[in-house]
Length: 557
Image 1 (cartoon, one colour):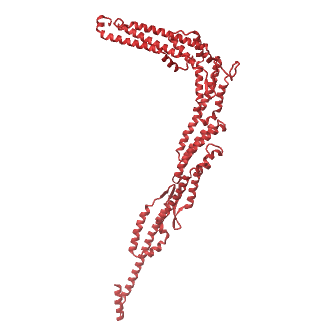
Image 2 (cartoon, rainbow, N blue to C red):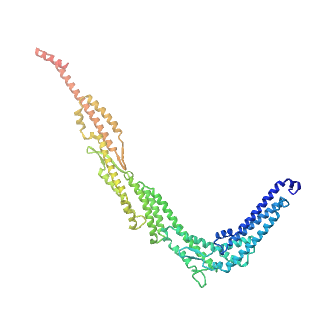
Image 3 (cartoon, rainbow, N blue to C red):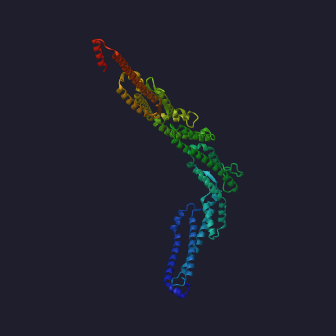
């Protein structure tokens, strides 16, 4: 439709600028090709490809060929678009620049390919690639680094041959033969690279304290590297090395080396897992209070010991010594943290001690006696303080581990001083309970019957004492059954019962006294009435008797 004259004429204002823009694009593509061939660009690319199969800038040539081919495809796409839009017949000439650039790209590709072929032939003539195919497979250098003698240049050669073949170039048979020879060993080279990378990184992967435990696997691996022909069926004169020239030897060696590397890797992985298990469990141990949760602490410690014992059964003691010593110090840190927490709260968190406050021998006292309570307390305190130095020896079966933990108490002398200060304060507060509750049992120290008879004579005395007794009973009912002084639990039930008995006895004696006073008063009244009636019944006969009778009447009234 766009080729119709009317439409083409109508779109002339659009098509001509578009053609001019396409011409600019073609010019930019040509500049891109020219820049890729410039010495500065060639040198910079050459410097960035130091692993080339020769000393020339061959990798840059292949990339230049690829770039040039891409430019050709872009130019052809522009040409197709120009024909579709009928731009070739307009005032702007696109056909000539397009054809010139296509020809230029073709010549440039041919030149680059021929140069690349010359470089590869020079490399083959100089045996740069041949040496890579005939050298030893692997060796450990003077610095202990395991090196694979499969040159990177062969990998680059394989990649270049594939790229050029895909682009339609016919690679000379000599180069293709060398590439095919390199590809034959490429798989082995990759496997050996992986093995060497693993071995060279082992220093960072192996835990230093476990290195002695890996000695057998490390020696076995290095033995395969140092003596590659061991267990091989090689009849070569050089029995100490294997070269790339024998595929059967290579395959046998790579298989043995891979097995040795896998064995080393797997064993190291298992050891690291044990190490991580010990780490996590020791961290858990760190947060368990040894004093108040000793059973939980012991349970977790038994789990840690089991993990270490299982590992110790697989390795000789001399190879385990460094690892065990390391973990003795880690457990020391966890134990010391629990130990310090225990010392800080020893008077509060130590196992509960029970005693009673009883009334005996007319006084309030402890049962068992205070001295016995002190003996129990200090015995338990001593057992905790001496635990790291006497009972705990870490992972060691002899005294070597115990020595590590014996220093714990001496390193915490300040905390131990506070422990004894708090202990004395605890028993001072415990002893003060006797003074606190002794006043409630004061009635037991006196003869209540005698006291009532001496101090209660009339109704007002009895009334005042009954009122006071009522108040005392209310106070006694408020007395607690239990008192706690840090870790010591004091039962007051016996002393409270004694106080209640004393108050009841006072009540009874007040009742007895009141009854006795009442009976005495009644008897006195009765005697008075009997005497008065007897006097009144008498009939006076004399003036003296009348006078006496009148006097007695006055007394009776």
